Image 1 (spheres, one colour):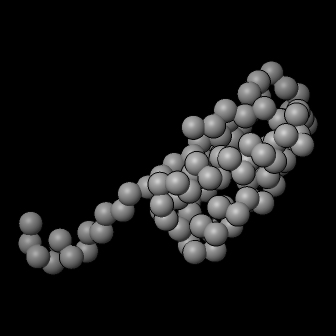
Image 2 (cartoon, rainbow, N blue to C red; image 1 turned 180 degrees about the horizontal axis):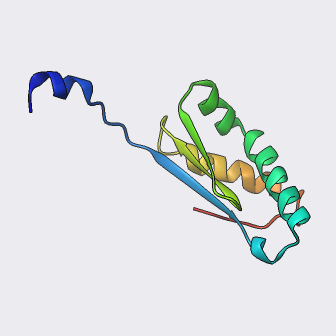
Image 3 (cartoon, rainbow, N blue to C red; image 1 turned 45 degrees about the horizontal axis):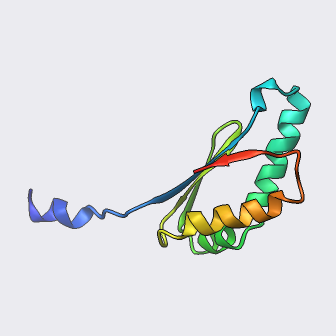
Length: 100
C-alpha cells in the first residue's frame, strides 16, 4: 500500500451494547412508543452515556425496539452503562430488556 493511503487509515476498536425490549411486538403501538421513549430517557440519563457523548466517543443506533450504543473509550463502558440501566430499571418493572 502506498504511504499516503496508510496515513489516512485509522482503525479503532468499538465496544457495543445492544438493548432490546422484551415482548415489544405484542404490545399496542401507543405502549410501544411509550416504552421506547422511557428506554431512551433511562439510557441518556446514565453517566457512561453522558460521558461518552460529551467526549464525542459514542454512536447511537436506534433499532426499533431498543438501541445500540457504540463506545470508543474503553471496553468497560458498555458494561458500566448496562449496570446503570439495570439499576434504573428497578423503578420501571413494566420495561423488561435484554442487553448484551
